[in-house]
Length: 111
Image (cartoon, rainbow, N blue to C red; front, side, top):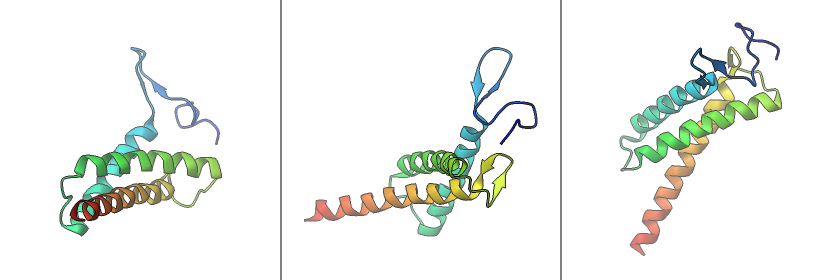
């Protein structure tokens, strides 16, 4: 994993002239997390009032999945330096955790 297209390394961020930097993997993780959350809501039919939690879990999961796949060297499906498959899998794990906790929380309130 050498220098990227514009000479910036994977560990570095793309810096603008005013000193503000934003890492591309965070932007791609946000896009991927929102996409997978929307797909999850489409499949389930509703978010049940936990949409912000689902989005947060999916975005953080995608970001962590990309980092984990890069660290483990899994190069199965990538978009440049972004590990799309690993990010998607961990984003769905985050969505699943939020959904399971929400269902278990509802079950305890009924009892």
